[in-house]
Image 1 (cartoon, one colour):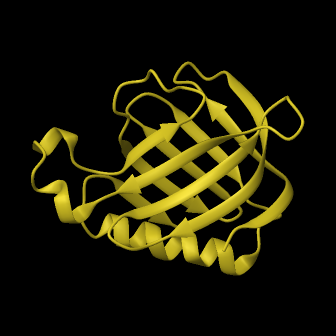
Image 2 (cartoon, rainbow, N blue to C red):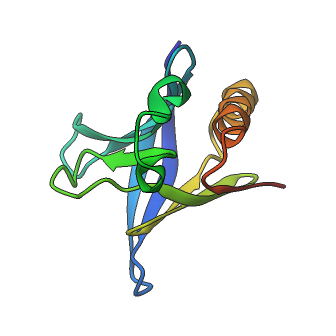
Length: 138
């Protein structure tokens, strides 16, 4: 199920410390063979969104070299980026900080339904079971 949540902000913070604020309009989680937590983020164009996706496929990870295993982070606005893996995910309500091999995202989930945030926490725990990144749930 996907729910629309107005005015939930996400900040992309570069490794140098500058940030750009955007508004997130959709939050969703899915489980199955793939473990996925996804965010649809509104752009400056009304009605347009880009995706920030955290994905892990534990079933097939053993086929990858160790340095390529983990939670893949992809942002639709940066399709040319090489494989970006999560190194640390911190959930400190209402914020989620996602550190990757290339950047840091800070997501404010203030206006997201409590059950949706709980679903995301559950999926993040399942992703963490297979190692490869630090998970801090506060």
